[in-house]
Structures are given as structure tokens and as C-alpha cells.
Length: 299
Ligand code: NAD
Ligand code: MG
Image (cartoon, rainbow, N blue to C red; front, side):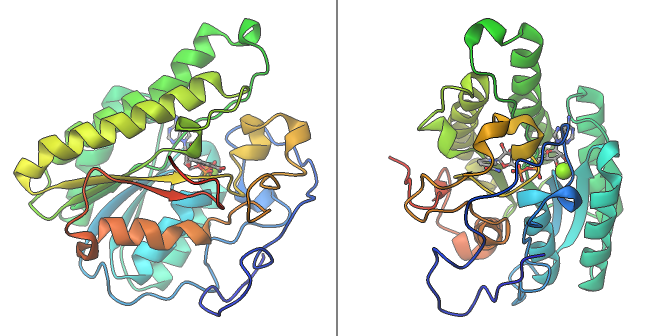
């Protein structure tokens, strides 16, 4: 694993690994433990300051990548965490369960397919029951599959990407707001792709534009219950999503090279933004999209 002191002043261009990387193909959804270099999710570095003390959070995609970094940070900030992921990701997930428990808070593992409406609704109910409440929902799970030509993009893939990225987020938000007290927060995960779409990510980029609009609309609606809703828009980040079909295989070696910072982000560099948007520190922020893009900023 890459270990960097994320609090020491340094040049951000050389803070974490830079291209080139190996192609390292995996089949989706991929595992963090198979990546080289290993992503940094803040395992050895993230310091908590009690910013989420006593909070009860459900995080999807919590086994790897950005969701794992959020889970580690939330636990070290004092939140109990329910972790959603796919059954095939159990090995990654068990590493996160151990890290969360090591922080002295509760970890609840809830594997299953959020593309199933009944499962998604049961997931929220189960998180609420086992954590003894629910006041943060962090939607990180997502599907990204690059296809170079529209002629080769199947209806099945088009609909599956919308189902995981957009429809499941809707089900999870709908079930959660019914249970959440005032002061609760929802943090969604959109992407730079919603603003600057790549030619190879036709339907994925479209789902991310949808997530951005959904976030802004829901924020205006549920503030009447005292709930805030925001989203994070990452640029290229070193996670299993990318080498497991998220990019054409030939794009992995120089992932992130076209950003001004010149390298992909590491999941650890996203965690503090999720903490900020989930916590009371962002009390006057709702309906916002927060870019973490390596310099390819949002419009
Ligand atoms: P990741 O592969 O580590 O995380 C994605 C997670 O989604 C998986 O771990 C899996 O648990 C979950 N998931 C996928 N399908 C699911 C299903 N049917 N049911 C339940 N869970 C499912 O990769 P990541 O890059 O950390 O992705 C997290 C989010 O960040 C995604 O929404 C992705 O679109 C977004 N994002 C990633 C990047 C990037 O460059 N990596 C850039 C912008 C946005
Ligand atoms: Mg995963």
C-alpha cells in the first residue's frame, strides 16, 4: 500500500503514485486488493477529530475505493457504519469491517445487489435497525463500463448502468428520508463525467448528470424535514472501477495524466470531503456539488 502523510505540507503532484501504471485488467466489480500500486484509502493515515461522533451512517460501495476511504474516515470520526457491497467483494469488505471496528465503533456488513428494489429498501431498514437509527446516507456504489462505439452499447448495459447509478440511489434516498431525523445528511457521488463526458462513457456520463440534478432537486425538497443533500464529483481516482472495465484497457497506464495535477487521485484524498458534507460542519451547505478533480474543475 502507498502510505503518505496526508497532513504534511508537500507538492500535490508527487504526493501519490504517478503514471505509468500496469494495465492490470480485472473483471467487474474488481477488488482493491488486486491493484498495483495498492490504492491508499487512508488506512495508515486518516486522523479523526470526533466530527461524526455518535452518527449512524449507511455507505454503499464501502468495500473498496472511495466508499472504503469514506468508511474508514467516518469510523475514525466516531460514526457507526453499515457497509453495502456485492457478495463477490467479501474479501475487500472484511478488511474494511476490521478497520471500522479497530476505530472502536460498530460495523455492520450488508452484502447484496442494490439493483434489486426490494433489497435496496431492506438494506436501509436493516441499517436503521442494526445501528439503532440512521442519520447519514452516503451513496458511493456505481457501475462504469467503457464502450468505444454507440453501435456496441447494448440496451442491457445502458439500462443496468442507470439502474445501479440512478434508480438504486432513488430507492435508497426514498427509504432513508422516511426514517431520518432533522440534521441528517445525504451525500451522493456524481463525477466530472457529468460535466466533461468522455466519448467512451456515453451512458455512464449521462447517469452522473442525472445524479447531479437529482441531488439539487432532492436538496430543495427535503430541507423541509431538516435534511441536507450534497454530492461529490471526483475526477479520475485509483480504484477497482477503472481497471475492471471502467476504462478501455489501454487507458489505465496513464490514468490521471491529463489532469493539471498529472496523476489519478487516491481514495484517501476524497474522504475528508465526504466527512465535511455528512457532518454538521457543513450546516449551511445543501444542493451543492463539490469537485475533487485534480484540477479539471467543475464549470
Ligand atoms: P469501486 O469499484 O471501488 O466502487 C464501486 C462500488 O460499487 C463497488 O465496490 C461495489 O461495491 C458497488 N456496486 C457496484 N454495483 C453494485 C450493485 N449492483 N449492488 C451493490 N453495490 C454495487 O470504485 P470507485 O471508483 O470508488 O467508485 C465509487 C463511486 O465513485 C462510483 O459511483 C463511481 O461512479 C464514482 N466515481 C469514480 C471515479 C473514479 O475515477 N474512480 C470518478 C468519478 C466518480
Ligand atoms: Mg469494490
